[in-house]
Length: 227
Image (cartoon, rainbow, N blue to C red; front, side, top):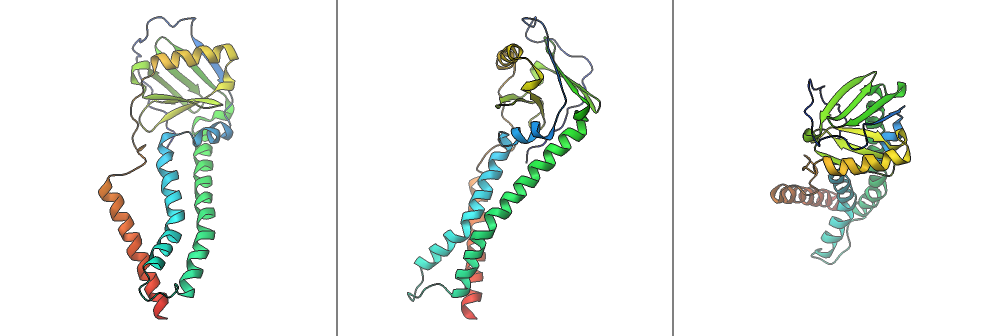
């Protein structure tokens, strides 16, 4: 899962991008958990998790179908196995969805609590970089140290490391300032790769996992068939 962590405060910021056109952009807002939950699905690090959960949810019925097709004596699958697959197919998706919902809620809760965001957070963008000031955190980041910036319908997500980001709600700025901030972020923030965002792991690891799942499924089938 993606995480939120403010990077350590830097001592002296280097100046990047020359003079900040139009002057500094400053916004202040009281953060809520909704600011984080609305951005959660857009985090690149969560895409592999979504794919993994989806594959897990369909694995059992697919293996049941595969072994039914290769049934050597032409009989149907054991009744116990059929009910087992049916129950798993009905219960697994809601269970996995609940785990994702809990993970999102915990991430949002911790993000607000760590910053004490309910007491107000100030975001400042100028020629030196990005700074965040809140009762729970003080951090500053030069433009050249930033990894990536994503935009959602309600926020700018600024990655200060491959796995740590700052959620900047758009409602902290007037419409005109939002447009100016968007242009400056596109101009000054690099588009570097982020750790843990590849949907597919190395082929050897993926094949090994599927082979193990297949063997486990076959073993359960045989046990139920012998009873």
